[in-house]
Amino acid sequence: MSRSPMQWMSRAAVALALVTQLGCYAGVAYDTDYPSGTYVSAAPPVYYEGRPVYWYRNHWYYREGRGWRHYPNEPVVLYQRRVARRPPPPGWRASPPPPPTYWHR
Image (tube, rainbow, N blue to C red; front, top):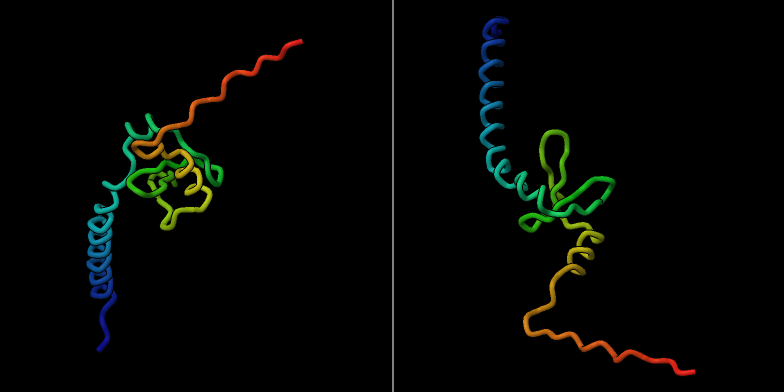
C-alpha cells in the first residue's frame, strides 16, 4: 500500500512536532542545572582548555554557544586545583611561624 505525498508530509510534520516537543521537555531538566548569572558574576573562573569554567553543584560548567555544558568526568587538572583550594578541616591548626632570625656583625 503506497501513501500519497500529502499523507507522507502530514505524518512527517506530526512526527517532527512530537520530536520537537519531547526535546523541549527533555531539556527542561537540564535548563535549571547550570550556574546562574549571579553565581557566575561572583565566582572567580578557572581557565581550562582556553575557556572559563565554574565549579557548580559537583560539576565543572562552561559556556558553549548560547548554553551551558559540563564535563561528565572531572578533569584531573581541575580536580587538583579544586582540592588544593579546599579549606582545612575543622580543628586543624597551623604551626606558628618560626621566630625571625637576626644577623649580627
